[in-house]
Length: 179
Image (cartoon, rainbow, N blue to C red):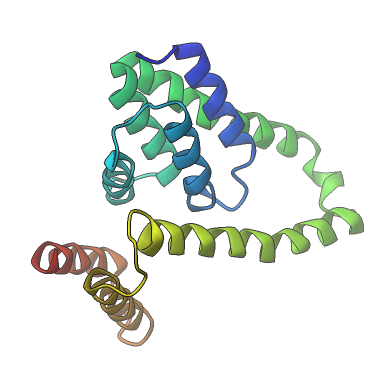
């Protein structure tokens, strides 16, 4: 059983660097959970998959599930508070000074500069989580099936303008059938 305070502090650290949303910190979250041995092997991907299908931010959902798996209800509360608290405090601070902050040219330039970094981190997380973790080879039938589902989902949303919920459900069914 993990220390609740330690879990809270780890998820505060993750929450502080979660620029770009939850997907950008999944690889960090996986490293931390592994380093602290909070989950059994292969359990992280399972919990993130469940977190991704639940309503709400994936990082918060994943933190809650990891905390629950490691320490029950008290672990879920500690991890959730840890991941949410930095964003809450930053939002309160930014709201208090936003009328001056966003007119500053340096701040605007910095925010534009963060966009490519965030995109890169999200792409890394997607590639690492979706294709490279726990596989000895990149080209497997699972990778090909995942790419087909991904391409079909992208096509369905962009070209055919299908509702994302329908695409998520269809992708889930495809995953059940293929895997």
